[in-house]
Image (cartoon, rainbow over all chains, first blue to last red):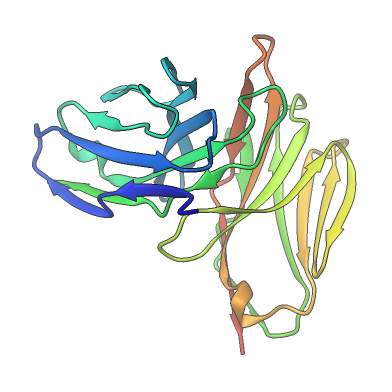
Amino acid sequence: NAGVTQTPKFQVLKTGQSMTLQCAQDMNHEYMSWYRQDPGMGLRLIHYSVGAGITDQGEVPNGYNVSRSTTEDFPLRLLSAAPSQTSVYFCASSYNSGLNTGELFFGEGSRLTVL
Amino acid sequence: QKEVEQDPGPLSVPEGAIVSLNCTYSNSAFQYFMWYRQYSRKGPELLMYTYSSGNKEDGRFTAQVDKSSKYISLFIRDSQPSDSATYLCAMSFISNFGNEKLTFGTGTRLTIIP
């Protein structure tokens, strides 16, 4: 099993550009989520999904869109990149969807720089 | 004030020493407590998971939760250079809507010196 796979690993964007960070998991997990990790801020939840067709906002959703058409894939779209979105982005998945905390499996991260 | 406070370090200790990592929190609703380990340029991975107060031991690692003091700890015995990583505490509770609210600490960067 590959686990959680994120692409690309690195990306440089100019302000105003759009892009999609890809996330795929092969563990048949219902729950998937996107976090950003910034120095001194910890991991902050952007969006999450408890199953195909169901998404919801996390703590810092502004400027990001998600969709979940299949169990395996959960792409994160940056609509109009801003320097404040420079960060390391992690996709994570879990077997449990919320009534009991489950282990989160993280991808290796996507490092995004917005100039 | 952040809901979860964690000293960012960095913390450097000699190989074989006992390491103590700590987090404090302000929300008494937290019920589930976790420690994640994150190696450089990698994603976090779950190390320890505990529910409510008490101790849990797994090999060289012991997780301790004191809900009365809102304080959690991770102890590493006989520390090894391979333990060099950033350690993130995390804690969660189930909201009134039935979903889980998970909050991470900022992480403590640990280096074990051979």
